[in-house]
Length: 429
Image 1 (cartoon, one colour):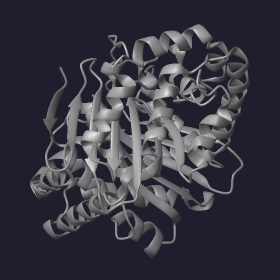
Image 2 (cartoon, one colour):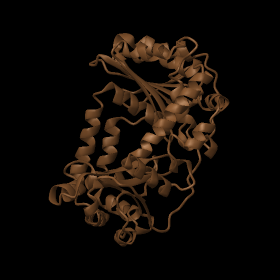
Image 3 (cartoon, helix red, strand yellow):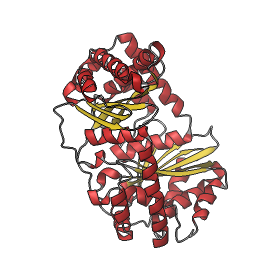
Image 4 (cartoon, helix red, strand yellow):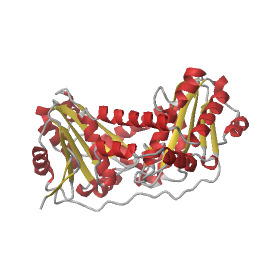
């Protein structure tokens, strides 16, 4: 028997008998429908020899199905109607999505489900796509900004899947076989591990009926769990990689908070005040006042059981020490908390961004499906804004004091810089 529950406000969740979850949001004022299919698997589910398997598999699902053996039949079916089709692999999720005009909803959902259930995995396609992915990995490594992010991940989560590139390594990708892909599909691409999220100008009842038509006979299985993080950091770390580039790319990072941690909202607001937007402390101090960087910003990432607080910048090699010193000064200042009026501005920025995002069917589809896939529940924008507004200056100060700790500080630098000792002296909070 199909069970139906209503999430707060306009989000509706339906669970099919095979465990497949369908979440829907009707947006009558739009002309589009966005479909996002979330699979509860990503790079953190992979062992070392499997590194890059989830990402490789994502690529292969675009290479032909039993019903659409030519890849052009897949991409052309969506693009031929003016729509968009894509996919992405993250640490904890893989998502396949499309955004189409409302009249093309039925055939678009049929296409995505066909990719998930009937892909061919022909050896010739695997061999060709392997070369494409190896080129993708080489391209990413050529970008200093991407390379510095990889170094930081290795420092935050050493010897753990979260510390590896989502795409894997040249060695692991080269060794991935067709059978490994099929086993991965059997384990993780199961209805109980899938969320189909649909937002747009279509009634939820129609959404559920179409999904049931396509997926009711999809057999379920029990997926494996993810690898927990057990590493704890007790001293600061610095990684330098010399490259002859025009800029030095640097990232400062500290271990953060998981998705379920109630303090995550306070940490999010701390990041907003420090380095998100043109009125943030880092932007004003480094760019507007001192001209030390064109781009400087902070951000947070939240995973199931861990997270990160990150500051990134690209600076002139001759001014890197001034830039790092200024960044550390700003971090020290916010560690003591932020004034109530500054906190209020950060709250308004968060609320405004969320509300503006939710005008787009793609954003709503991603918002609902991502929450359901990772946390088994959905919060409305109003609920999130309410939680953000509950945060007090005292809570921000407490969280800042706990997170912004010298012994947990990491810095990665990529570019023409060799001043290790000088930089190490600056890594103090």
